[in-house]
Every structure is written in C-alpha cells, then in structure tokens.
Length: 115
Image (tube, rainbow, N blue to C red; front, top):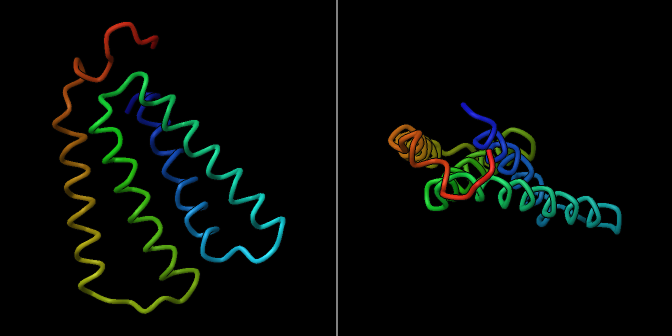
C-alpha cells in the first residue's frame, strides 16, 4: 500500500471520530474536537485526491468510515448487535476492497500529480 492510500485510511479514521462526535457531543470542547476531526479528515481526503482516482478513493473513504462508525457504535456505545447489519457491512467492505484491488497502479497517479 502506498502513502496516498494511507492518507485515505487516516482520513477515514478521523471520519469515524467526527461522525461519532456529531451524535455524542454535549459541550463546547466536544464540538471543538468534532470540528478538528472534520478538518483533519477532509485534509487527508483532499491530499489523497490529488494522487488517486477520485471515484475509487472516495468510495474507499466512505466505506471504511461507514464500517468503522457502525462497529464503533456497537463496541463503544453498546448499540444492538444485528447479524444482518454486520453482514451488510462485510459486503460493503468486500466491495471496497475489490475496487481498491482492481484499481491499477498506473491509474492511481493522475497527470501532473506530485508523488
């Protein structure tokens, strides 16, 4: 995995944090943390978008963020465990991984992008 895909993973990690923050923030400091997580998430998404195919990059970002958010709600916030929900998240992840695998290395760096 190259450094550009790592930016997508970092961005997706912070996406999970800000989505959780939108639901669970109660005070001023919580909202500041949520805003910082949004900023970091989109910063890494924008950086990755300069070097990767935008469609594939974005679906990986959203898929990882969605899976991470659902799993963290179950593990951290005691959301009910639903086998169908987990199966659908796994299906989503398989699709995301498939798109990542099918994206040719030559297609990843756009013309004029700096590596």
